[in-house]
Length: 267
Image 1 (tube, helix red, strand yellow):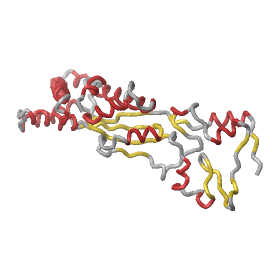
Image 2 (cartoon, rainbow, N blue to C red):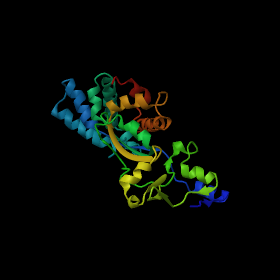
Image 3 (tube, helix red, strand yellow):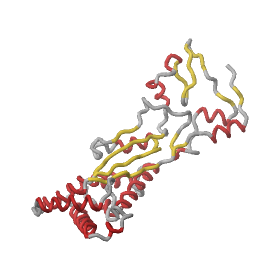
């Protein structure tokens, strides 16, 4: 079977339309401050029902629904409730360096888009730290385009199909081999009878394909994950970028939870 010869224009148009996924990590919420403060006072045996009610009122007054300070409200920033919240948070973080259990009440929700599949495996390696709260897009249920990959692999790798186009020809839609017909699919060929079978087709997906996932982790365990995956360590570069994006946004939520603080958590 003869292969179609492509022009340079055809190839460059193909590259232009090539689907690239930019890594984006978004911290959508940090919750559990009420419970964390209660645990702190409980451990000191200074908790009372009256203090409990005050903690709940202060948290509800100062925080928005996502657990961030209502920075647009000057009345909040200048209030006594805000000062109490800041004081309690400083106390909690100081205690949490060693008494790490109090930090386990603070849950961080992270939405990730475009991390390559192998990088997702690196995050999945910490599944116990996330308390198994990681849900990603399924390669069984999802479909991917030929050559689709995360931004990290852009210009670093080429699929066989892309390499053929560089050489000036296009692979045929069907191939006959040993009395069987294989049809073109993402990054390769599948037996014709399985051309719509996603369980079979995903056998051709590369580890560079983009992965989207939602995860939740408490601050104590994030301390461990961040140490393992942050910039300066031995993790994959895109995973490092993911970790640093998350850390930056945690600090934007609450300025007291700095990068240096998280690295100091003894977990």
